[in-house]
View 1 (cartoon, rainbow, N blue to C red):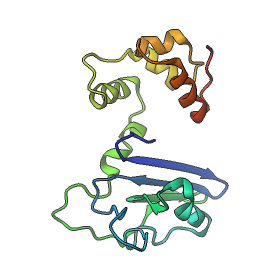
View 2: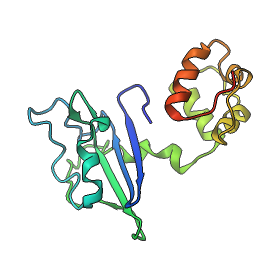
View 3: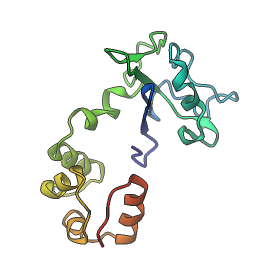
View 4: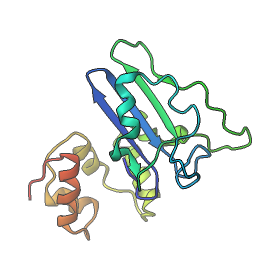
Length: 173
């Protein structure tokens, strides 16, 4: 997920389990451009299992060769619960934390209604997007020109084709 405003998250599934990293550009734990070392917030990845270590430095999860991570969690395939570092100590007065309180909202409430509300607010749309069209996309149905135009009648289909290819979503136009 990349919202285009500097916030993002990635989820990696591998044979060892699941690794999640998120980046809230307003977070106190954001070290991007803050130091010359290109290091993450101290303790952010403490306890991270070895199979996930390569993702911490992977170029796909960096910007301008600097790390972009304010939240990190994982779950090995043998685990019964999720884990995160317990050694992070952001300032108590900072209310923004690591971004986990809002970055993953749409994963927790995966519904067309929630998505429609998010897109309406994020893109400052005057009306609610077509929730039935969003539901079709969320179910992985092939994206047609009609479906796209139900959501945004003025969009260039070339942009949709490019974004769909990145996400692996089937397109039928």
